[in-house]
Image 1: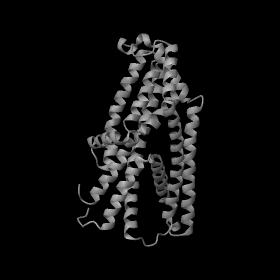
Image 2: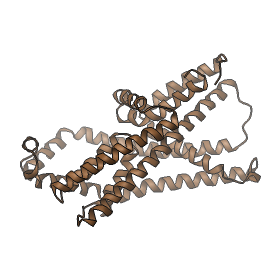
Image 3: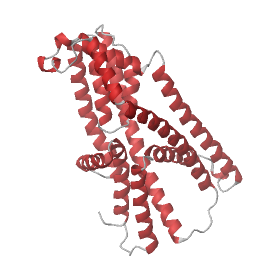
Image 4: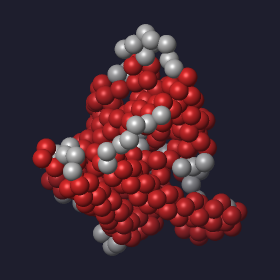
Amino acid sequence: MTDRKASLAEVASWCLAAASLALVLGLHLLPALLAGLLVYELVHVIAQLLPRRVSGSRARVAAVAVIATLVVGVLAAAIIGAAAFLRSDAGNLMALLRKMAEIVESTRGALPEWMVESLPSGADELREALSYWLREHAPELRLAGAEAGRAFAHVLVGLVIGAVIALREAVAASTRRPLAAALIERAARLGESFRRVVFAQVRISALNTVFTALYLAAALPLFGVHLPFTKTLIAITFVAGLLPVIGNLISNTAIVVVSFAASPSVAVASLAYLVVIHKFEYLLNARIVGSQIRARAWELLLVMLVMEAAFGLAGVIAAPIYYAYLKQELVDRGLV
């Protein structure tokens, strides 16, 4: 906390940081930023475990280079492995979507009348509606495929950039000019905010996945209920859980629809269980993430609402990180 007057270099660095963070969302570069921050923070955390005798020597630079290479390799392998799993027989995502469509069609008799009226009358009508939708949205689908490939390329570039910056930090830095020093300070605080928020969200998603796995793979089989695509549902729960709020909606919808394959009562039980678990998770989320960035739950929800209205899904993902960074800057200046 400080009451000193901000220097011209600090004011300029704040303006540049704000413009850069806005451009990241405007230019759809959020995947690259998150990938770079993830690599940088992982390398930074692991490098701190190096023995003190390695510090300040060429051996430390070599060690950091090895760590950065391993981190990038592991993350790239994890991304490729997740994609391969979702295409495999055990976790085929398209097969899951087809199964969900079949379940909805086969359970029409158990659904309320108002819901049945909004659903296709049969498989032929469903195929016709799907074909019509595909024809009408073919340009958007081609664009979505191109955007997915571009986002994957951005992630790979971000991984490399994060590793290079982490390696650069291991080299003794020369005296920096005021603006460069201020910009580095802004970047360091952004990285710290990312580490606090994302690592907390990973813990929350992991805990949610454990509870969901206990229900799908342990509790239901005890009652003789074996849902299809259990492994895929568990994987979707973890990956989607990394997205605040909307991730739970995605995973819960998939689980409840698949539960109809057993019976409507199992679907109701699944919905009740998920509601209870996520009520608990919301409290835990507010406590963990809120304590990390010293923010109340209503603050995070308000920021996420505004960011979603301005930037869509990317805004929801970036909101906790951006808000944590902004609040840290204000706290360090003694303004809040």
